[in-house]
Each structure stands twice: as C-alpha cells, then as structure tokens.
Length: 336
Image: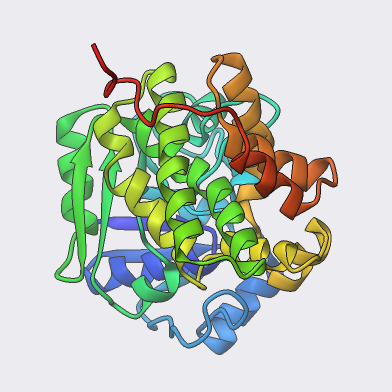
C-alpha cells in the first residue's frame, strides 16, 4: 500500500484517484480551486468534469498543498498542461529528494518546446519524474472499464514500482524507458484529433478519418524519430493507440472542439462550448515549431495551425492537403 496524492481534481485526476483507492492505496486529492474543493467535499463528485463518478469517503480532499504532498510515496501531477509549470513551481521546498512525480497530463510547452516532464524537472530539482499515458478517457477509467496504459521511467525498478501501484484487473499497465516518445505521442495526437473533429464537422466519412489517423501517426513518428524517440513507442499505446481513441470518441474534448470548428464556429466559440481545456490548441503551435526546428514535414499539423491561428477556412485546408505534390507512402518501401 502506497501513500499517493493526486494534484488536480479534473476528470482524469479523479478517475486515477478512484482507481488508486480501489487498488488499496491511501489517496489524497488536491485542487488549487476553492470552489472545486468545496464541490468535492460536499457533493463527492466533480459534476462538471466527471459527473456520475462518486469519490469514496476513504479519499481525502485537501486544499493545503504542503499538507497534501508531505510524506507521500508518489505524487500524480494531473493538472491541465498549461498549469504544469505553475503547479510544479509551487512544489519547490515541499518535497523530499528523490520524490516520485508521475505526470499524466499531455502537452508541449509553447514558449520553451519542453515536454511536461522536462518542465517539471526545470521547476523542481532532485526528483524522479515519470509519465503515465495511453488511450484512457477519464469517463471510462472512472467506471472501471478495461483500459491499458504505459508508464515511462528512467530506471526499470521505478517503472516496475509504478506498474504495481497503478495496475489492476481493469487497468493494465506496461512499462517503457522511452519517456520522450510517450510524451510526444500523447501531446501531438491531440492536434491530429482536432483535425479529425473538423472532418467530422464537415460530414466527411470513415475514409477521411482513417486517412487522418494513419497520416497523422506518420507525421508524429517522423518528428519523434528526429527528436530521439523510439518508433515502437509511437506505434504503441501512447502513439497510435491514443491517437485512435482521441480521433474516434465523443469523450475527446479535442475532437468535439474540432467538430464545432468544422461546423463553422471559431476556435474561441468551440472552446467555450466544450467547457473544458482543449489541450490540442495549446500543443499545436509547439508542434509546428518543433517541425520547423527539426526540419520535419508535418502538413496536417501545419494546416491545423492555419485554421486555428490564421483564420484559414477548414474546407480550403482540406483541399490543399489533398492536392499536395504526389508522394511515395513510405521512404523505406521504395524501388531499388
């Protein structure tokens, strides 16, 4: 049994807290939002982000950050990606050397192009930062539906330790040394999911969705390989697995926002209607900047940026993608 604190009381944080509680661990949930803390204490659920998932009485709800993180075996950082640096910075001076922090958010910091584990390490020194990711909608994890994820850590022993903490009969966890690949897959798939939603909003069909998924993972893997990630990771749970579920499910806030934009709404109107953080918007500019930094062609990522930030018409963007120069599918499958 471990003492675990989940920082962040959105849908994913609560789903993981319930999972960890059901696994027999001592669990604390912390939120920076007073209204959220009051709702969790009084209503025993987050009625906005994860309605219907009741928080057991055995889970402690804590508003004081120092109290929440002191003497914990594992800290799960589950705040939205845009709040990762701010939250990590608040942990300075509160943690023991070697403290285990598991990042479960998905994103790339736009201003620095750092992955979120790099952001955490930049803010908090002498800690062990790991990552948990994969095709895992909070709505389904909270209900105990069968799910698989992958945990990335710098040592095998640490990965195995976290595997044992998170794994259950409904939550299967694999291990990996490729933290970078896991994070890139989780962040970049959100941008492709925006494109998939836009196609749905235009009433395009299954053929279009399949094209976006397959060409999307091609773009993600090209960038990942250029940055030093492993190809196997990007074609695993945190790459193609997470991409499929995010592009196909109405649980996906990125897909839902994309649908609204495909129907003609602006980015701001779509975000307001979704009522939750749309991570792909925050990762889109960073993804484009990384493609330029590493000289990697990412036409879907580029088109999404043009739609989001340059007021490009969605149909025009699709037409331009379809009419690009002819190309071979894979450079490895060429004629001698």
